[in-house]
Amino acid sequence: ILADNLGLQAVNGQPVEANYMLGLSSFSMIVRTMAGVDLKIQQNFQRERFTFITMVEEYTRFLFMFPIIKPWLWMPEVFALFGYKKQEIYARKQTRELGDKIIAKVTAKVIQENAEKGENIIREGIVRKSDSNSENSTDTALLKNFIEVIIRDQMDPTIPREDVMTHDDLISEVLTIIFAGMDTTKVVNNIILIMLALHPKIQQGVYDEIQAVMGQCISLQLETIITAAVLGKLSRFWS
Image (cartoon, rainbow, N blue to C red; front, side, top):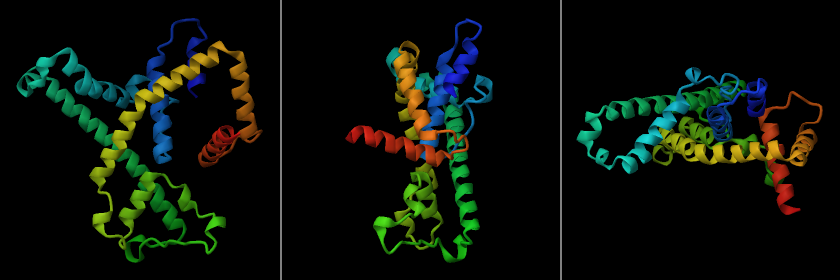
């Protein structure tokens, strides 16, 4: 999706603002990997339609750049006097709202899956099925992302509350992963784009691998693609 968007922007030969699109693609990758949720934000990469990337940049500036460039802003009174405190509070609210939205999407998915299986979470708790032969088990619980596992634990009345992560702690974990992974993922994506642009042999290798994984099927689910990608990486590692 990122390559397609950049290609559409570069058709007219004009300079392309790739930084924001790299931010969107990196954020999308992190959320899909962490929560199994596709926010479909790369299809609409205009800045005004998705402000979280701007909030990440602003919050990073408050936390890391300002103390280095303007050390006098370490004083809370001065920080508030210049209006930065209000901006920081606004950025915090925006980022927390996004964390809530991501968790809400995963929660809705869990509730729907439980309803389809005929499980009554409130009165009976979550029914955990196990295969007598664990080596041959195909239990899909093994494929759950960590947010879904925590949410299922929160819904399970048989688990002691002190052993379950709270909603606020879960939001903190989600935002920490996003903030920690944004820069690294953007750098990796940037390097990948440069390598693809400069080396036709790499382009062909990537194309061949995509064809080997997906074939002629264009209706693969996200879980299938992720599983195939992981298996491909493992096979290269051990070969």
